[in-house]
Image (cartoon, rainbow, N blue to C red; front, top):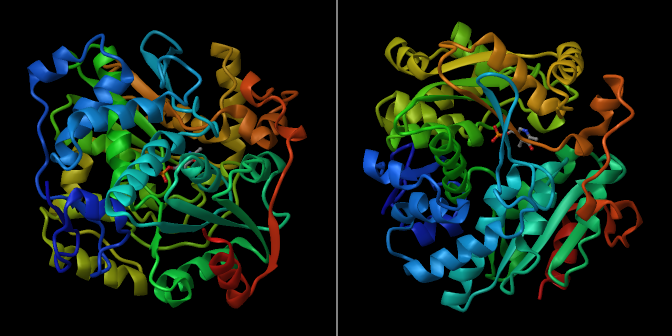
Length: 462
Ligand SMILES: *Cc1c(COP(=O)(O)O)cnc(C)c1O
């Protein structure tokens, strides 16, 4: 399998190269050159298979023989053995035909574990094969940092440095990162805000000379392997609900668009999907674009669903590439214009998107209302991100005979603020984490200065 850039100028890469690479050199994102197909028979044969087996079968064509089958099966099995539920991503039926797909049974209680448990192991595999080491740097205001740390803590060939704004992340989120005491894990609390941390990571990628030639790897959601890993749960849940004999709809709480784009890939591979409902919080660029063709940036709003607080959805570019029928030049022009000024999509590409995507935006007051309402109706306490999905799924349901699967992207214990605001006493952490607040922590506090951060990384990497 070869991978090409959404802007059409960067060289095509192999799977191994694309896992080790972030953004394409032309500013685009990598996508597979062709979309592998899952036949009716192949889908039907997955009924009753374990999650790891379905994962192996769905991802195998993307790996394209670059890892032998037995090794890849082992990597996949190992990655998903870290989940606390035997089904890995269980379906929970809410009412006659509405299901929650619980993606929060991984080590950090949010769906990002599904991708990062695999990505860490894939990186380690390829680095070992090349006898290379690499450094991961990332900035986080929450979910991604802890999921990346958990994904890399056992990797011999990787050192991971995660920057978070000092005293500006919740205690649970900080402790999920800082209580991982592995030798290759380094948490840095920056005396500044998230943007300061992010800017220092960006500057480090732009000029990597402080690492003397060691590879710097990004694990943010533009890495293709993260999308690939997420395709699996769309297939697995649809098969559990009767695919390929029956269609399914999905509702996805969305921000950078990595999650729902993976669903779209499953659809393009042949999974019978009726529609995708995109749920956003008040940061609603995706909803404005689909509903009103208003493709423009707006001020960031801090919401009760903070992991969906974004101005621009980086992975939307991958969908635009498909909507523009893989015309990289048109995508590059659109996105360059968009950086400067409010833009619109051309008519035909927008019409193509509206054939399979609906959208709905949910504000903070509604998130609280939904948490109360859903509890009354179903006894479930939803996390605030999942709450946006629950409401969007109701509003954009479409054909009621088609099962609707809402993706539960986080465990409610992780976002206690919203749950308490909604009037509940809070939700206990699951048993394997109930001592989190007593665990030993380790992190360095550094000034918001690039030279201090880079010196720390250069000194501590192994
Ligand atoms: C990251 C995240 C999202 C948004 O996912 P995208 O792939 O960026 O669209 C939604 N909910 C939770 C809990 C998250 O951590």
